Amino acid sequence: MDSPFVEVADRVWVSRRPWLDANVTAIGGDDGLLLVDTHGSRSAGEDVAAGVRGLGAGPLLGVVNTHWHFDHTFGNGAVLAALGPVPVHAHETALAEFTAFAAEARTTRAVAGHPESEGYHEEVAATELHAPDHTFASVRVLDLGGRLVELVHPGRGHTGGDVVVNVADADVLVAGDLVEQSGAPCYGEDSWPLEWPLALDTVLGMLRPSAVVVPGHGAPVDREFVQDQRAAVGIVAETIRDLAARGVRQSDALAAAQWPYLPEGLVHAVARGYEHLPRSQKRLPLI
Image (cartoon, rainbow, N blue to C red; front, side, top):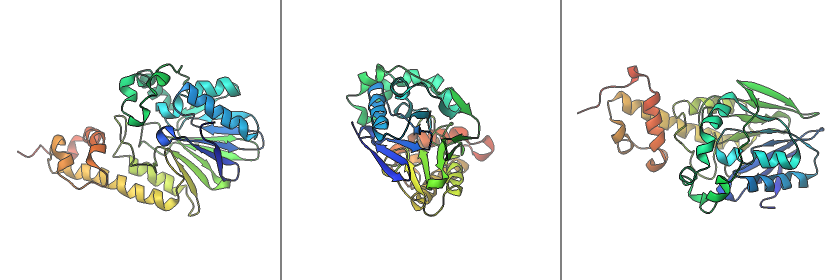
């Protein structure tokens, strides 16, 4: 098995995968398990399924995809083939994004955007896609038997269809890529940089001081870490607004301000932020 599941709270196990440092989480109830994310390929999903089976914590009851990206969804088919047909839950926008973009994400060009995926291109390209098939708009509650788990769409941030998974009785929240520990938050071509801080405000409202937060990538963190990351993504959003309001050209924005993250990681944040700002909040570029 590539990476074992480690129990981080009562019947909540996290497998931190070496490839992309991505997390897969298993949540147990009296009736069986809920799996959150399935990693990035058929073979990765097969390894995840072996790990779930090794827990001996009951049958798989369902899968949740925290968003559509390949490193969280491309293991869906392998997991279901190994552990049985179960519902795959996701936000309705995540399904629309998966339908629109997942096939392209199998190509070398798309996966090449992740340097850590060197050597995995053929594996990803050969993966058969299995889309989420149970969607919701705002909140869904799943009963695992003696344990209720909340699936919540806190707003748009990393993607338009982000979902967090709240295990209230265990004081654990699985945040997907709305929170990242192994690096800076990833602003991609489908991110919502101006709304990301508001989504994290919703997440923070769900967390007690003692909460364990499982990020999309990296080690579990606490509420203070999420607060700090919310402050940083808030600075990104407000800096974009300020620059646009002062008439700074988008092409000049990265060099025109102090940023909380390396500018090269904010190219899409600036482009998407300028795109999403209403015209009333933009001035004509300074000459």
